[in-house]
Image (cartoon, rainbow, N blue to C red; front, side, top):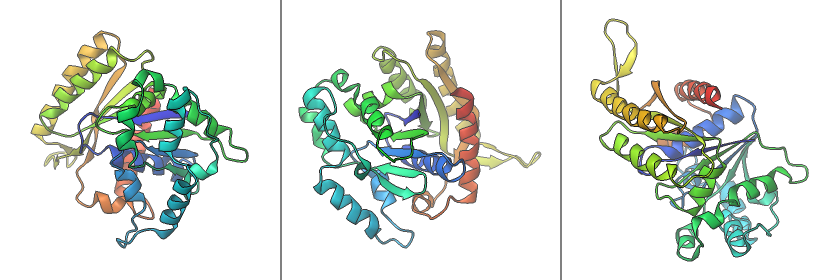
Length: 289
């Protein structure tokens, strides 16, 4: 099983949509058994999944969610259990995971995660949580073993994010075309470099890109401004490559801005244009794995 964490200390860069669409692509188009973990207390992914295209709540998800919470089968309860003894004593079974569709499971977030950090031990004491939890998922009797686990991390780095990044094979870093992109990447990579005992591979790419059509070649390219922001990020990445951090910036790939992206999250099928982008993104990731 490979673990892919989506991380950026800046909010609003599209981590949730990237994580969910990539998970769906792996399950629906590659036939991979995929678990998507919503590790963000804001619960953007959990909320999006339970909304139907019609705008109504998915009652199947809501009834399942209520039953799981009543039984204590939640990410929060598992994390709390681990923090009390530095090991997972709570039995992990299939009731923790919502089957969105064949080959695609979701471990939802919980608003109690907001308050967990107040009483949680130091992040380093929780670093083994994600590996132990995923190992427990892999050994559920009768459950199909996972090929991939994708983790949507919150913008506020916390103990759960720390465990996710330490367990990750790849850390996806979506950036937006703005002046904060290179600044945020430098802060994030600089902080992680001094704190990670196991270094994952970092893949940085532009999301919500503003593009234009070249009148001569008819190909779509980043706007001049967007290309400048991406060049700045490339410059920062080179500094970390020089000190041994495995960082790759996808200079020739981007996901364009799309107005109805939130509605597409709840769609029954991947929008054809989005499928194309995530197929290409996955090809890029496979070259790094």
